[in-house]
Length: 195
Image 1 (cartoon, rainbow, N blue to C red):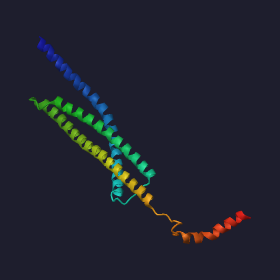
Image 2 (cartoon, one colour; image 1 turned 90 degrees about the vertical axis):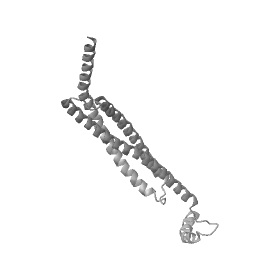
Image 3 (cartoon, rainbow, N blue to C red; image 1 turned 30 degrees about the horizontal axis):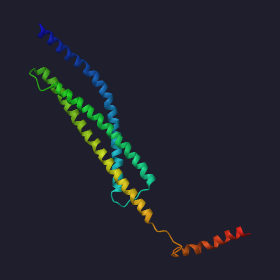
Image 4 (cartoon, helix red, strand yellow; image 1 turned 45 degrees about the vertical axis):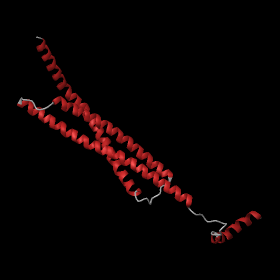
């Protein structure tokens, strides 16, 4: 009698899980749509990062600190977005793997086996797509970090170039032709003050 009661409880639990599965799928669908939107944003950010890296990799470009700060803030936002995408996708991947474990291996019943086999294949395809998206999100994190480093190097180059830039010196009389050209205008201005 106890085995029958236990069998009925297991059957009811299994049916409850099957009944809850469509609701979980509906909720997951809205999460999937949000993830897809974040992934689209991430792909656009990845394109911008690669363009920035292409411009900065020649070690010839120097960037003003103000512009570097703006670009760095974009990269920080991209890193945060990719972190959220990674967390979300990892969570969904764990859920898919758990569902795959629930389904187990092929059973003996052919009708049930076909249904379970099809669901298992769908879950495996979805998991493969998730893993691909995860790789992209992690790659964007690394690329953003590398682009931030390139930005810092370009800013340092700007600061060094600014520091070592030569200006005309009166001591060396390098700016004497400029003084001679400006002299008539300066004299007329001074004469206006003298009167």
